[in-house]
Image (cartoon, rainbow, N blue to C red; front, side, top):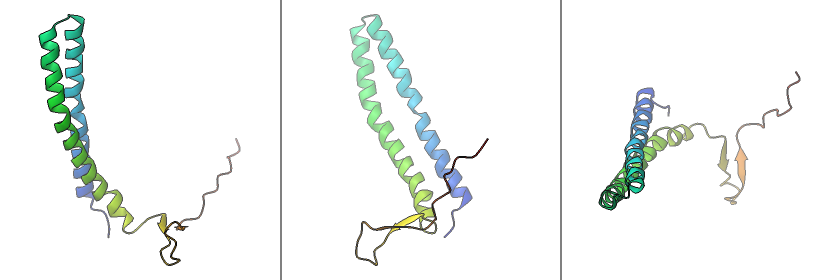
Length: 110
């Protein structure tokens, strides 16, 4: 099974969009720092509540986007092309069989 370029682009774009919402958290932290500097206790409380309300929503959205991107890229490609798999035929789940040979790791001469 091959990966679909359009689907891959879509899930990675969604992941980037989800991550970019961190700017809102950055803004609120800046606001909180400003409120602390000005000793504005009501604003400290308000911004703290806003952060506590927003952060779980942000993290949930980002987690979903990450999982979707993972499933549509890494999991998808692993169905055909995995450099190693557990050797279940031997009965030993910890026995890893490498599909690819080790690369030549000799340093290049200058």
